[in-house]
Image (cartoon, rainbow, N blue to C red; front, side, top):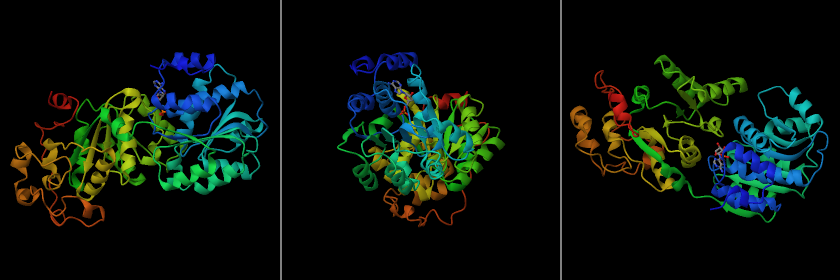
Length: 460
Ligand code: AMP
């Protein structure tokens, strides 16, 4: 087994790691650190939760100290570009943690807050600058930041940056840097656009890749619940009747949806808040802090806002809406299994989302098990579910959903593969049917079929 002490990192870094309680490098760290210490460029395929931040922060700090040099005014020796403010804050924090035994000057530059403090911090030059592309470009055009002496560039979560439309800002930023630099690019996925970017910014990179998503998600107990859209809200609040749902990250597809779900939970007496791009930086930081400190039980987030959220002890990830990109599913559920912990991921899937579920299952190379106990919410969708045929003995299905049984239980139904649902065409047998009410009554309320011992908690 490799230890951090075997990797050739300087003592101040080893001391900082020891203080964090980290002795063994994660696979991405073990593979990346030796190459980065040699000054090589690197293309890393890894997602959040793998320890990728330390895999570049440690060797970069090592080399910064080795090649002693003062940063030029208004410039930085190391530039890390991140897609979101939250990730920027976290990466900055990691540099501070691992670099705690060095005298390091670092700056954070992102939008949504005043420019003046950022300009002031940058005036004398810093060792490490962590920035989001938009604001960085703004400050460059004002002459407050220059990049012509940057030694190391890191593009973190590059696929997200491209998804967010940052390709042009990135190209402009890269063009303002010296050609002779070390460049590191991390991405969770490798679409053609990333390959193109990598080819243009990296010089003979080593390529490292950590275990594909399917093995990362293995530790997470996943369940899908088929439910009519109009019943999702009821089902969600029922989940929180269960005490084991201590700290839940709830995902919606839109910012608006995130607000609505947070309000719904608050009204139901469940402390919650929403986090998304329309919120001020202050409001986002507060929601995150409340979530970390347990003042709220649910944080409702959109995919982009949730990037880089690094909160320990998330017991559940709930997909109130399934993501239309399968990779997002992997990112989402990974929030509940940080640094080796296990977790529970629950997905609410309506008739229109069955296609998304199929795509997700292809990507993770496994079927998401169906929560049959809650199939009564929408047996007609469950019948087309990906985890197998519904069990006829499922009590609720038999007792409470008889009207749909004939069609609903046909495993060879026209939408058995869910393709149409994705195109927006409502399945014939789902459309126009009256809303099926949630069958939960007081007395049998609570959320029974919850993985991880929840059923006992709910009943007891
Ligand atoms: P990241 O993928 O960089 O977001 O890191 C995920 C989490 O793992 C963070 O909370 C890190 O502090 C933690 N972590 C990073 N490296 C290690 C390690 N070698 N051992 C244990 N935890 C780690």
